[in-house]
Image 1 (tube, rainbow, N blue to C red):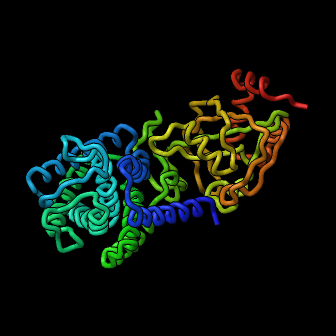
Image 2 (image 1 turned 135 degrees about the horizontal axis):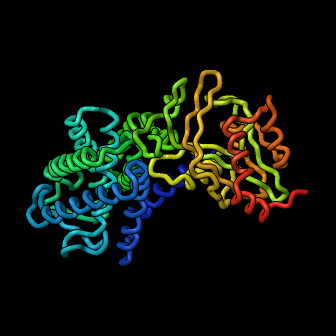
Image 3 (image 1 turned 30 degrees about the horizontal axis):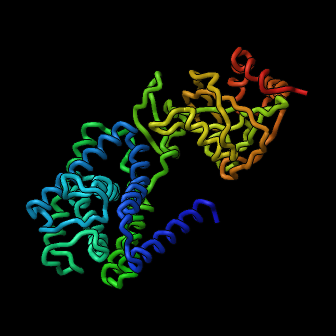
Length: 430
């Protein structure tokens, strides 16, 4: 079992156990601090995905817009009863803005809204259908959340209601507010025009929230709520997880100056006419002056089984080349914490093998480490430390078995003064 899967199982178990204590242990006076922390932690996954999707600036702008809208509509509802019906918050969700609305509403509603939109955006391409689906999905989330929150005393409705203390008017209000929220997202995306498709992984936070409140319902014996939550989670897996894409598998197609133009799945990019896209290349040296080589996995679409430099990869949208290089270095050969120096920031190449073309703007990084690689067998067939001088000779042979970009990069590095200085300072060839 992978570390990622173990962490996921541990997190789900922690949330289920946490829900048990929330239901069965009297909440202490300081619990509003814990509630605020929980809201922030639940929001982090959705914000992380939004940042990868839209970039830092647009992510903050969208979250602020949705958060302020949530605060505004909640405050309106408390004062007027529209659109949810008359209700009031307890002190358990943190300090209240304007004396009525907890600050946590800013972060509590937004990941649910974005999660619903992430699912809706992958079910329908019609804007009106997306808005309607977003509204219905967000309201479905509240079918699970609201009864548990009433049970724990986070808020109460005047006169109670049919769904474990929640009135019809509340769900009608959620349909209204979520419809408006979806319109806000649609208008924002029309204005900013993101280069990545809507990721279903926006719903990760929403799934964790539904999971937590499902167990609040379970421990509270709100059985209809629990059954509804399991059904919602099953549908989220069916329509969300199965349609997700990996952000690091979306190549950034660019113009000659490196400006991103669009994105496309890696599996659809490489052909006999591969468009220019963003990448990076890495050379790792040990203290003896050996360069780490890798033999590319036989399953790779481009240059399978060919010996090349230490690591290569593709830059994600909204990612600095140096960050992408560190990410890929850890993924392919298990190196982390290695300082990387960008020696050839403007390197570009085009190469072809067996009808498949590589066409990349590919900054070249150099790093130094004496650790042994831990191969990701999906990416790397074998590794080898080879003295730098021997590697250069190997590259210069007419029948060289080294990838064409690594050959070009090696020669450029060999003649670069900054590389020579770094190599002399960090390596002592025997």
